[in-house]
Amino acid sequence: MSVLVVGSVAYDSVSTTAGSRGDALGGSAMYFSISSSYFTPVSLVAVVGDDFLDEHIDLLKSHDVDVSGLERRHGKTFRWSGVYGAEDVNTRETLDTQLNVFADFSPKLEAKHSESPYLFLANIEPGLQLDVLNQMKSRPKVVALDTMNFWIDGNHESLKKIVELVDVVFMDEGEARTFGGEVNLVKAAKRIKAMGPSTVVVKRGEHGVLVFSGGSIFVAPAFPLETVVDPTGAGDCFAGGFMGYLASTGDTGPEGIRRAAVLGSVMGSFAVESFSADRISSLSHEEIDERFRAFADLSRFAALKDGESLPWRNNRK
Amino acid sequence: MSVLVVGSVAYDSVSTTAGSRGDALGGSAMYFSISSSYFTPVSLVAVVGDDFLDEHIDLLKSHDVDVSGLERRHGKTFRWSGVYGAEDVNTRETLDTQLNVFADFSPKLEAKHSESPYLFLANIEPGLQLDVLNQMKSRPKVVALDTMNFWIDGNHESLKKIVELVDVVFMDEGEARTFGGEVNLVKAAKRIKAMGPSTVVVKRGEHGVLVFSGGSIFVAPAFPLETVVDPTGAGDCFAGGFMGYLASTGDTGPEGIRRAAVLGSVMGSFAVESFSADRISSLSHEEIDERFRAFADLSRFAALKDGESLPWRNNRK
Image (cartoon, rainbow over all chains, first blue to last red; front, side):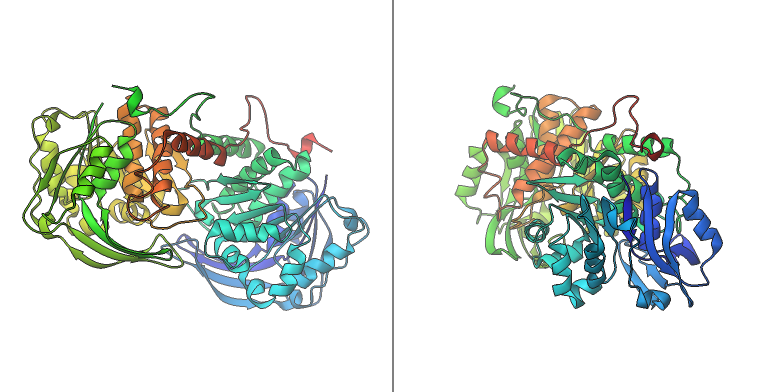
């Protein structure tokens, strides 16, 4: 089944401990599309300027991403530049944001897109997210949403309105704490879940994700990497793997959600291994399978069998 | 098999978001002893002053901790006071440290203690840790060591000397980075491992632990708790569960190390649920078994079976 993503396509200038890259292909919808394209058909709705390079359209097309909803407008493509912390790759400072053609982004869905059974509302203004959902002819099987502190602080009420209507929410630790209004992450996630979503995914960067779904909590580690080149887009690649798994299998039950979160973590781990989409756009099925297996090994241990107890002192010499 | 622990027994004054407690029973060796006492016989070597309360000796005895090596000296017991961050329980500020009788601590092992097959060198001056190891009649089956930034910064060479001789090293994230001389945690842990230890456990507080053992990495999550009262002693309770498992089962192979790390995480998760040793000293076997099972559920997902692949787009409609 196909996934529709609505979000940004951008040119990023990024500086990390591994170096820097200017005007690199970026944007939440771009990262998401390429990540999920390995698993399921993807349609992308976004806007770019007339400076957007054909080679980047070709890159998306080479992944069979449907770019018929990628609008080209007169003006410049959205540009972002930032620097990541040397000690803590989870922290970053924005140096400059130029919305350019993205400033007036107001997505109008084509008929074929308005019937997509899976919808990912990438990080855009919450009012636009609601507008997109309202344009869907029938309620998708799964609607997921990403957001950021900027909207949590400035558009709390309109964000709350759309959160109440979606199935899956992705937020990072700090965002979940702020939006949930609780310092304790478990309490914060439960409060967000109580607003409506059946699943809340708390992204913790190099510490993995916490997935609150149904009545249970699932913890997926991040892959311990020796080389972290650029964290940009890791969260969107996570969402791409997550939604790609659900859309491809149709398994939105507890086991499906867990595997989706692991596949999301797999795709996020590839994303940080290069600048831009270099790594994420050149993966083989074998590499992805292999890392999924490595994730299983990472957290594997012998659980207690039925009737088995821990080795109590009283039972032993 | 029995474990010998050499470290501190203290009175702590602690302030957290949950409240504060003055002159509460604390100290690395105390937390370790009670935690491991559920699984294996423990002997404690430490020093206290003549202000140390009989009820606290009785508490240790009620857990069948061998306190024959707990020296009582004229003077006051080691006192520490600190405040934990409101936003981030992983950060704490030391308000005051009074070494008191601990200042001259120079453990002399009794004959019976010098034959212990498992040895935990809790966080004390690295030269003393080496001195204790040298007093062992035969090389224990497993020697584990904890330390802190104070020694890493100030006694780097003498710490390196003892690290080279032990099997297991426990450090927190920042300590591992500093001691390993690498910002990247995987690289840092590998460098520490290359000094000699077969296992390096990197403690990440509410983000769980990374265990580098043999050629593999194991990630144990922390238990997501709604109530974190006081993180003091969590690391020592982790070490107590970890060493308690190894000493009780004798399984120091890869599977044993993984289960030990999970049991350590279980005991650490109980430690933070109360001030001092309130919770950790009043656990039932059932509660510990139950939380161990909950940990298994926390990170469980369906791994790929032999020959199974992820749901590739090419394979599907």
